[in-house]
Image (cartoon, rainbow, N blue to C red):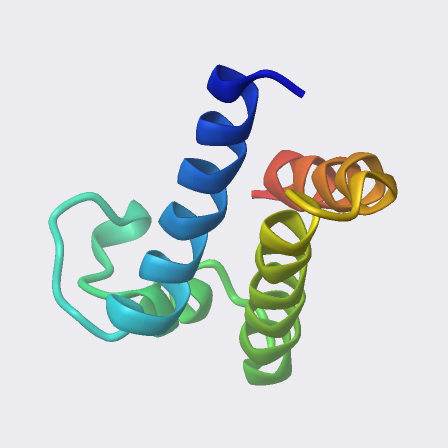
Length: 90
């Protein structure tokens, strides 16, 4: 993959990790339904509490696989595809 492709792949993975690890409980005005943080947003939309943890774990694992995919190319397409499916659900 090209330098630009690797940079975009890494940036996407780090963005997801930032949201789900560092900022998941921080207040922001960019949440739907008047929610102030990520757990509240899941509550606002009526998802069971387990859904928050399941989606979060999946996104963290897939983001880490995208990073590993910088060295193991075969991981990139499935990881990116599953992340895309999760984002469509969002």
